[in-house]
Image 1 (cartoon, rainbow, N blue to C red):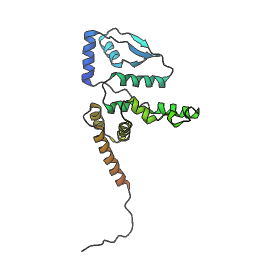
Image 2: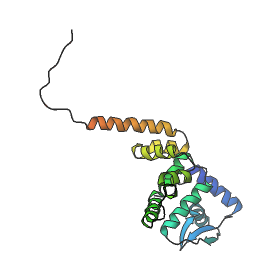
Image 3: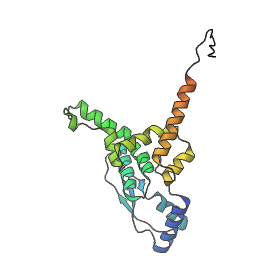
Image 4: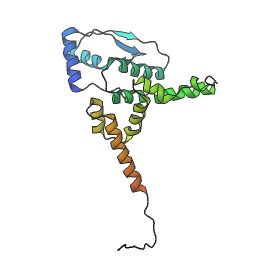
Length: 188
């Protein structure tokens, strides 16, 4: 999944600032791949502006992904929902880390183990409960609802409640009606 893109207004504001002040920060790259500065790069190319790059020391693609997401979380004014979306991108990487630690016998004590949900909630700067509400309702939301959540126009609790109702309705519809003869009793 891609890092959450700037809105049209945010991109236009960045472009205006760059045209006025130039590109002040170097683009962060790893082995020829831009990790941070995609929008600045696009604007620089469009307007033929000079820019510099800074090579980031990272061992592999997984570390590059973690670096990108943590960098975005640290510099952008994102809603809690958007932060959880980004943190969820790290779920598999952190789960693999936890499995590796278990295999190596690193986390024999419960308090030394990695609780993936808690780690991701911490990365997203939210409570574990909020993290799990977003995670549970995310696949049940429409794109329009996700966009409202990213903009802060819809609360996580309201989205979670909507998704829970939809899930409940789906389960009810999937229960088959029993076959056979039925008697109707009337109480008069």
